[in-house]
Image (cartoon, rainbow, N blue to C red):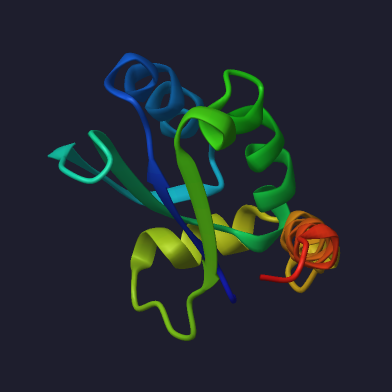
Length: 121
C-alpha cells in the first residue's frame, strides 16, 4: 500500500471540525494534532490516508474552508510500517490502491495558471 500524508494548518476555530472529518474515516490512520503552531497561528493536524480515500477526504476538508483559511499539503509516503496501515489498505478496494490523486494534479494546474497570470517584475 502506498498511502498519502496530509499535513494541514487549521485556524483554531476549524480544528475540531477538520479532525472530526478525519477521525471516523476508515481510510485515515496515524492522526496527530499539534496545537498552537506559530506562523500562521493555528493547529497542525497530520495524518496518513489510503490513496483511494484521499480525493474524497480532500473534498470534505474543503467544504468548511480548511484550504482557504488554512492549508493542506499532500505528500506521498514512500514507506509506512504500521499494522493500522496494512488493515486500512486491506479494507480498500484493490482498484483504488494505486489510483491517481486528482486533487494534487488540480493544485499543480492552479499554481501554474497563477504563475502565468502574474505580471513580470
